[in-house]
Structure formats: C-alpha cells, structure tokens
Amino acid sequence: MLKSQLGRIATVVSLMFLASCGSQSSTAPGAGGGTRGKFVAAENDRYAVTNAELGAVILDGQRYLRWGFSLRVKQPIQLRSVRVEDVSSTPPIVYIADQAPQVNGGQWTGYSGAIEPTAASNPWLYDTTASSRVFRVTITDLTNQVSVLEQTVSYSPQSKKNLRQWYGLQR
Image (cartoon, rainbow, N blue to C red; front, top):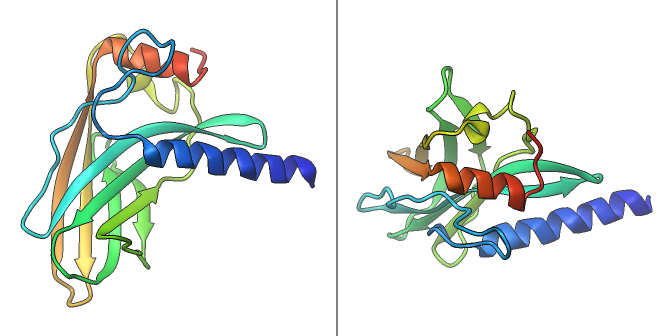
C-alpha cells in the first residue's frame, strides 16, 4: 500500500516537473547541455502546439518515459477530442486519444502512457545521429470541425545523450 502511494506521489511530482518545463531547449542541472528537443510551434488560426516534450516518470520504483503535449486554444472553442500520433514510425504510434479534453486557461495538456525506456522501444533515442520525431495532432471541436497540426521535435546527438544521462537510462 505504502509502496503504491509513494509510486503515485513520485509520478505526480514527475508530471509536475514535466508540465512546468518549457518546450525550448534548456539545460538540466549537471547534464552539461540541452536535454529537450527543439521545435517551432505548429499552429493555425485556432490552435498552437506549445509543448511536445519527452520526460521521465517513476512508477512503482521503475523509470519510464512519457511524452507531454500542450495546445493553446486561440478561439473560444469547446473540444470534442484530441489525438496525438507519432507519425515518424510506421505504423504511427498513438500516444494520446483524449475523448473528453479539458481546456484550462486556454490550454489543453495531455500525457502519453508509460513507455519502456529501452533501445528496443526507442531506438532513435539511443542512436548517435540527430533525430526528429513528427507528431500529428488532430483536434476535433464540438461542431466536428477537424484541425490537424504536424509538430516536429528535433534532438541533437548531445541532447539525446543528455536525456539518457539526466533520466538515468541505460543503453
């Protein structure tokens, strides 16, 4: 019981850290360089992607990766659904399928499920070349109007190395 509660607390703290991080490249303490991918926000007249970031969470004492995404809703629109897919992979990987999206302060935020932090699950994170992930963000409002944004996040070899070190991931 206590282990489960501590795991949940660690998850909440990790998520709070992830949610507080900006999407611009920055430096993690002691990491010796940027840890976050760089991107130029994908947007249209209705929405803007404000965050697409890989983070780490601890669940039941185990480290996992988790993608976090945020959208700014530019108009007074009520959302029906938000879907986020990694289209860098074939077939695409669905990270979020939010059928009841909540907008707070003009912002929607969602997180993927836990992802194994292994080279088999995330080969791009462990290779020594620059990598880009492309996410298709599909937003449907209550009038069934659909907007699709493609968000690219780029990682240098050094930022990937720093991510692995910062999050304590082994090869």
